[in-house]
Length: 484
Image 1: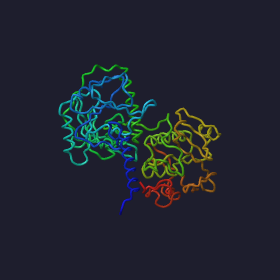
Image 2: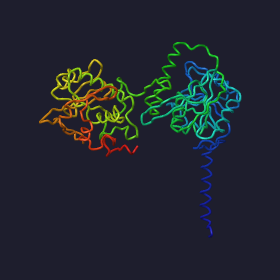
Image 3: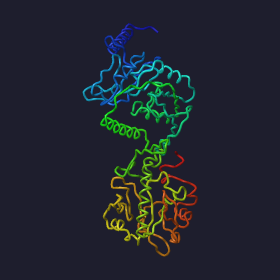
Image 4: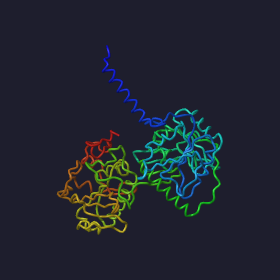
């Protein structure tokens, strides 16, 4: 095919324009920008992340590691204040954007060109050759090992197992073995591949070791523990005020980290528990429930453990008040199902249901006040009120936290227990009073409550045959148990 002079001129003009655009994009004397991380090169970048502004050894730590042939990068939300004189060649990367300057790079990994990165705590001193040995140990490992840990100072690290129970919002620690660790306890330098670090959703969140251990456990990564240690700096004693500030900041950061990671309870290796969810002074962990399906079920999780704890406490308190007042009550609906199956609240339930005899309401001062339309808070901080949805009552964990026990008033009519308001739930039906004559004790949520005398017959009347043996979510049309 012959090319006409006009076509040749047009092609030349297009080529010239492309060349001009490339030159403008490249910039004078510069290199073209890249939207991808630079190709990694052998080596280790030292990241200094865990330090406090008000009292630190950042300059000493940076100076010590800058003496090695490795890049050193200080990473913080904002520049340290008071200002820290960093040694020449030590970089400072700020994570938090500010109004008067361009935002930081969206991806910190663009500043790191080495294949490995070591996260070094404040007050650590370099040990010649140890970072390289850690890197060699990582590359020599087979299987799922993605982190190598080395202690700082003379105290050896404690090797821990770490099991995550995402559906229960729980991180559970236990004793580990030298050949199998998921976490460690003590000051630690952590080394991993740069690509692994920045594949995590929270790569530089503090406290760094805890954040990495939990995220690594989500991925099933293992941890190799070194016996050789980095020296710790000799530092003057911390003042009481600085210790108080550091402890408060550490607690605040840990709580924020657990919120980010979806952990509401840590079970420590010694059996102690740390709680990060709701309390009597806060709102509950989930909002208004629609179609009998709380939001957490749609994400494949069950009721947060802090909410279950509050429900148990509320149920035990309400039962004690009802029994002290002589009110006849019984476990109803899903709460009776939980008692029969587990002796506890169903792990995805979001309230507790009790039936009561309507004629007994006046025996309890708190219930009588609620029936008169006056919400009332008892001395233990539980709030009693008439439900806005109709003719039944609710006892909330507190004014702030609306986890609750529902009290359903029934009355006998011709040997059948009935009530004046029905919500249209499948289990919301009349039943023979003979189920309550007599009522029987049953273990439930850490105490003993009263229940119908034939729990299976009662439940199959309300939920259908096989209700005990075939658990299901409250509204299978929205979410089924088998979908998880």
